[in-house]
Amino acid sequence: MRYLAKGEHNRHFELFTEDGRSLGRVDYDGWFSVHVNLVVRDDVYQLGASNFWNTSFQVVKNDTTVAELKVNWWNNLVIEMAGGSTYLFKHDFWPHKYTLYTEHEKPIVRLEQDFVLSKFSFNYEMETDDNYNEANNPLLLLILIYCCNHRHGRIATGGV
Image (cartoon, rainbow, N blue to C red):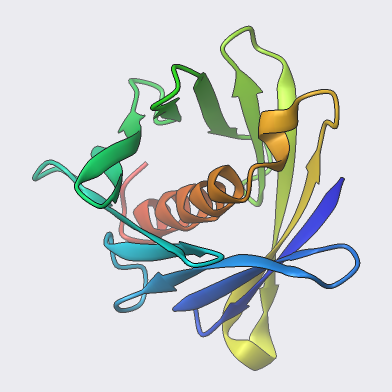
């Protein structure tokens, strides 16, 4: 399945299906802030750093952690969902392309970042492997938008 996330001034990103249905959004407090709200239908999740170095993050809903993200030694993000699924999010050779892998190293989501000068923001095109139901989970897709922006922000500030 294909999705499009449209950014507005790098503070708000809305996720759409290929037929134009909105699935949710990512709302930043400021440009590339580490704290955001993820909104899926009527559910609001808070995603933010859980350590000083901004290398560990938690996704929380009603004081319950639903996902954890950690930067590994290779500067990729490991995503652990509360249900026990683990994923690896990493950038491809080209810095504007990203892939989400299962714990068995199967690519299930591919993302491509596109800078839109008129909106001074990024859009993301996503393609999922329909053999994996979790690849079409709106919350996971919103987390991936955050991961892309986090990676981009680390590069822009001199991080790796």
